Image (tube, rainbow, N blue to C red; front, top):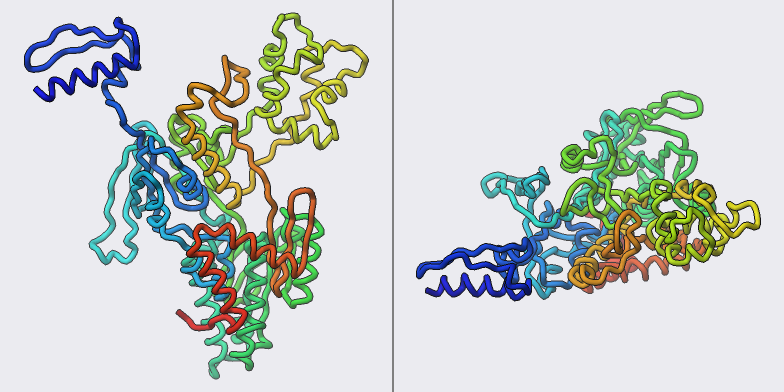
Length: 577
């Protein structure tokens, strides 16, 4: 009997939620049960699911995007599951400091379960690698990551989801250069940094052996860095400090054999920074004895030599080396490539989302961080419908007052408009329209409107693949999930130009807070908003303060600061551990 009453209790709750008697029809009932028919789909859904059923949200990855989403999610309306091959979050900006012992690896990681246990709702974590996404069945296929097979081999399992958040990051881009995978080091994970640290010490120890020839000793003590971006530059600077401040005292007989070479295919290093920083960094490296070779493209890596092609002359040069770090950007992971083919994005280089981080062509899937890019909608694709929204009288012409109701929505929906206006030094949208008129007429037709905006889409740029972008995307999506029910009733986003009403949420907008480039010798370059450039020792202290504040927990803050103090007092540890 209890099942009978429960049945009707759920039915009555559905009835109460959907108000009208016509929505609930009792066809027949007998002592053992009943048969119900619903004339409204929502009532049926409420009955079928029952009250309080949570949507299952699966997060793939616990890097910057995934952890930022988890930390900022406050709503208990979701059943959250995290799947990642590592059970910790790593503060990747400090990985170069791990390569030389300035900071210990464990100081910059936080177990993901420590973060999950602080949430007021349950969070499940699975240490596994997702190797396939099935959007049709809303399933993911995973395997455990017991690399040593000490517990009986890899286990495989599947998980279904209601909402999938893809935050798997990216892999290092080798550009299919022969020998890179086999012989070069990468710097994406904690294990990479620790392996590099061991390799540095191995090179020094081997070069110290009495049986090593002069030529071989020179080769072993040559450290090559491929890629002049922030990671490559910072690693070269950290290696220089390690070698000159610490290892030179421990290995005095071979300190003069040290060579550090930085190879960059472009015409200058740090190409995403201001030219003043690029110039300062290059000059400092030259003073420090770091050989910066621009216009050098690596074509092959062997176990003892690296072959480069000089772009200007076309000449190929073979360079002997002891250790090489490959840091030339990122590429899409195979599982993401397979997923893209399934949803019709197989011709793209990276997973495309809309401005709300929803994967295009796939329902219920979001993508954040390095594995995705926002496919910003073009103004010219919607120019006619934008004009018609403003033309409420269907007259075919508008005056400047008619745009007042839509101008804010245009600027929010299409951020390239604001960027274009700032570039042209136009303070208002009215000024943009007047610049296209060419006369004193107050009336604007569709052709004049097109003429005013036809160059706007040229300002569209992809967001950089940085921790800052990923963290902001995770926070944005979590805030959307926190306010999902509220915004369903009261949408807060811009006007729907190709529909009725408004979008539920404001679209994601990245806010750049600046970027650092540590250059060694307690000197750092910073490029901050407002075209403010700072270089030198004082900026190093700003770098210390910012990175300390951005660490994910007080535990990691204490550990990292204590590592910095230990290094300043005792120097860096040269043990091969």
